[in-house]
Length: 181
Image (cartoon, rainbow, N blue to C red; front, side, top):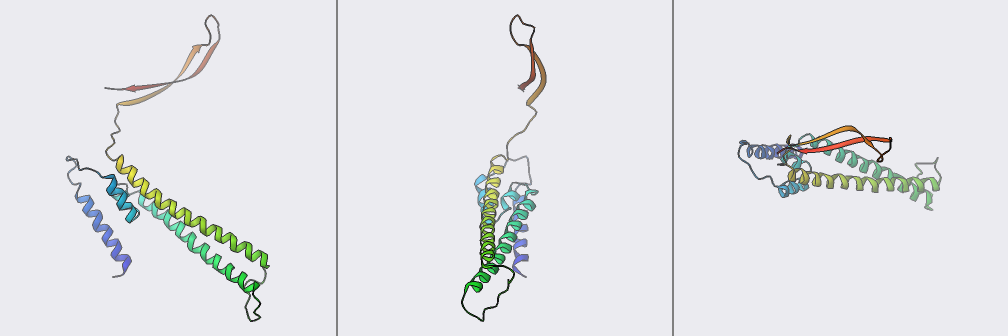
């Protein structure tokens, strides 16, 4: 069995263990933000699975996959133009020039362009990874947060007299918060 299949098998086994712990919803099992954070740091998406936010996992892996692809693409282009610039500027006659239509200055500009994009792609994949951890932690903190009908907001137009003894009126919106006991 290859490593990919073994990894997928372990993830599904772990998810079944986590799901089995929450069979009886009447008993409150403490939901640990620390556990969600550690799980998400070890394997991106595992904290989201622990928080039962399965819909976020494909989005997370799309972001990581896209940034990973950009890293590979930009690194390949950077290496190509780096080698081409070195080949163009060396004094060896037997060097083959793979980019004869570009000047040495163009090759240097293209090398720098792809190096910049490579560095940006690394920053993006790091940001997605960190956001994955933060998201799992925040979701775990808000896991037991109760959103009930006890809070309401009413928005309505309102009219008021601008000054005492004048016939000038002003208009606007009135915001009313009601907290029901």
